[in-house]
Image (cartoon, rainbow, N blue to C red; front, side, top):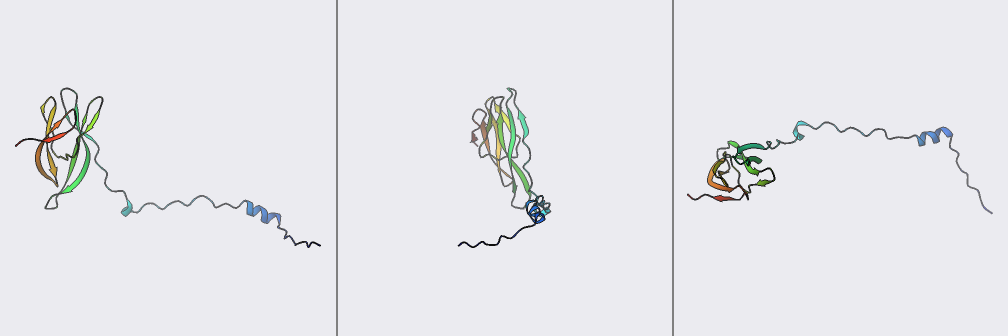
Amino acid sequence: MRRKLPIPRLSPLLMLAALGCDKGPPAKEPPAAASEAPGPTSPPDSLVLRLPNGTELWYALAREERDSTGAGCVERTLEIRTPTAKIPVPLLYTRDVPRQVNDSTVSARIWNRCVPGDEYRINLRTGQPVRASK
């Protein structure tokens, strides 16, 4: 013989309340505190030199540096831009405005920790910097 277990009866009102339960809209995140604000952004690319053949040199990446006295400066990389290509100049951070040497070369000094260093010749076709002879 089987025994029937009592089944509790739920009121229709309780069932509707259970079905209509909602967590509500997600909680809004509090605004970021001033200490959590993003750091300074890199300066935008800027045109430095336009050559007669249409090739342009642009300041691209930037880094903030300090000299031995603690004074700050911003050193920038160069990028050669033609109508068909963008050629980064590797490992040459400068504060100089490059000067044209000839149709295929420009010149700029390397800078490190806000101090100018050796002059480099930059091949406009490859972007390769080579230390200029002294």
